Image (cartoon, rainbow, N blue to C red; front, side, top):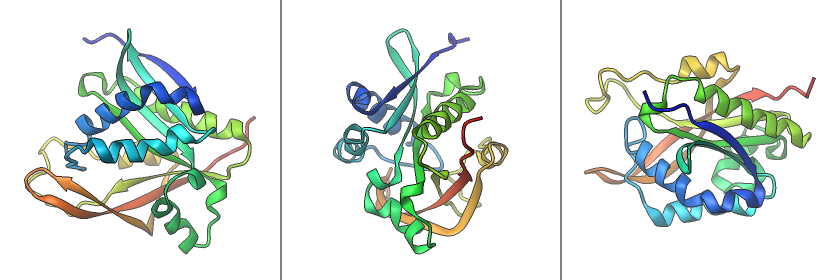
Amino acid sequence: MSPMPSITRLRGAEVAPFLDDVARLRIAVFRDWPYLYEGDPGYERDYLAAYAASPDSVFVLARTGEAVVGASTGLPLLDDAEPFRRPFEAAGEDPAAVFYFGESVLLPQYRGRGIGHAFFDAREAHARSLARFAATAFCAVDRDLPDPRCPPDYRPNDAFWHKRGYARRPGMTMRLRWNEPGRGELEHALTFWTRPLEPRA
C-alpha cells in the first residue's frame, strides 16, 4: 500500500509555488469520467491565476515526501471568474457570502483512506476562519446516463457530498467549454452544491 500522505494547508501567496502541481493533477484526474477533460496548459494557467491572486485562497495539499499526490482548492467566490458567480446572482444570493471550493483531485492509489474528508475539513475550517462567509459551495459536471463511456465500477460522489451536508441546487447551473478526448471542444453543464457554513464553536 502507498504511504499515507501528509496534509498541508496553504493560504494566499503561499499557493503560488504549487500551481504547476495542481495543474498537473487536474489534467491527470479530470481526464477520467465524469469530466473527460483533455488538459490544456494554457487554460490551467488562466484558471489557477485567480487562486494565486486571491489573498484568501486556500490549497490543501496531500504529499508523500516532496511529491504532491492530491490537492483541494478554494477561494472567495468574488475572487473567481464571473461565470462562477452568475448562478448565485440569478438565484438572488450574494456571492460575497460564498466561499467556493474549486476541486479535489487525488491520485487513485491514495483514495478510500479518508483524504477526501480531510480536504473538506481543511477548506471549511479555512472559510470559517475568515469570518465573513455564510456558505460554502462547489459545482460538479452533469452527465446523462447511461453513457457508454462511464466505467462499470464508477461510483458517484453524491452520497459522500450529502453526508458532508451539501445539497445539490437544481437550476443553479453554469456552462463551461473544454476539450474531450476524441470529441474536441464541447459545452458542459455544471450544477452547484451548497452548504451553510456554521460559525466556529
